[in-house]
Amino acid sequence: MQDNILIEMKGVQKWYGGYQALRDVDLTVRRGEKIVLCGPSGSGKSTLIRCINRLEPIQQGSIVMNGHRLDDSVKAIDVVRQDVGMVFQSFNLFPHMTVLQNCMLAPIRARRIGKTEAEAIARKYLERVRIGDQAEKYPAQLSGGQQQRVAIARALCMQPKVMLFDEPTSALDPEMVKEVLDTMIGLANDGMTMICVTHEMGFARQVADRVIFMAEGQIIEEGAPEAFFRNPQHARTRQFLGEILAHH
Image 1 (tube, rainbow, N blue to C red):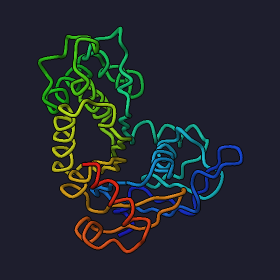
Image 2 (image 1 turned 90 degrees about the horizontal axis):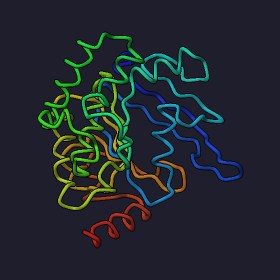
Image 3 (image 1 turned 60 degrees about the vertical axis):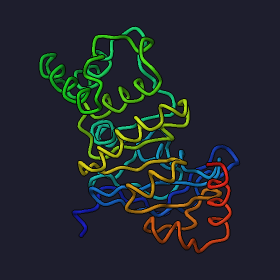
């Protein structure tokens, strides 16, 4: 099974000054697995995925991605840039570039591929997220939901091995959440390895192979969605799910 493992975190510790954001985190992600991370605000979910793509360095422990240990070496950072796609809460699109140019930029710069090929890839993934007809527009001309789908297409253009989503729907108006979740469900059905930080429990039920609950920088509980939602083992998990369900 070892070659089936895409990401392995062991004993990961992360501090911001005196504040410990991650405490002794162990996590193994297999190819094609869909994982939903949930938990209260400040529980370390976003920090965890930011450590996987090296936006944040760790102080202790190890993260191995696709057989490469992630450290500060140029090679490790290169592996991450190539293999990990990230979608943030805010869309982070370049406002002065068209949707198409936004999607072509990274493949040309990081993968050194020609403009013609980069454009073909970009158009393919814009179609994939059902937004191909908006390619020549600028981000400001699109709705929030459309911009987030462009951000997903842009990440896909690097043809990553894993996609990380950091609360991708939390900045959207309610009527736009579904179009973004539908796009993510489509990716999941295509077999993409995904780690999603989200409060969308319906999405978790539908897509996740595993739901992981975090609190105070630790993984408190994890399991298949059915068992996790029906019979949470930990008091903190039960409290959290109770609060989430009360809000929806």
